[in-house]
Length: 134
Image (cartoon, rainbow, N blue to C red):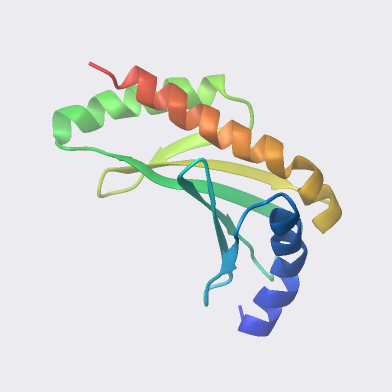
């Protein structure tokens, strides 16, 4: 995605987040980053699919070893099944993130559901972390 495309697509989201008191930034890859309650959220926009709205709460937990990874997969499955719209995933290095994905009609529609997406990602992360407590 060219930076100009990224800026044009991200502009309504950045404006909305600023109006809500957040300090969003757009990186060179076209990803909108902002903090909420000390956690970094990402909106990973795709110029080839403007109806796709993905929000990510990345890397909020890291697996220490293979046994913990297996335990985490159980917690991931249960969490993803319990929290509407959100899914929790673990990458190959054991980092765990919460993803909320939706299809929207336009940026106005996305802005209407943005807070709920943040809440769903946060709820999924909290539920996962609760499951991983000793």
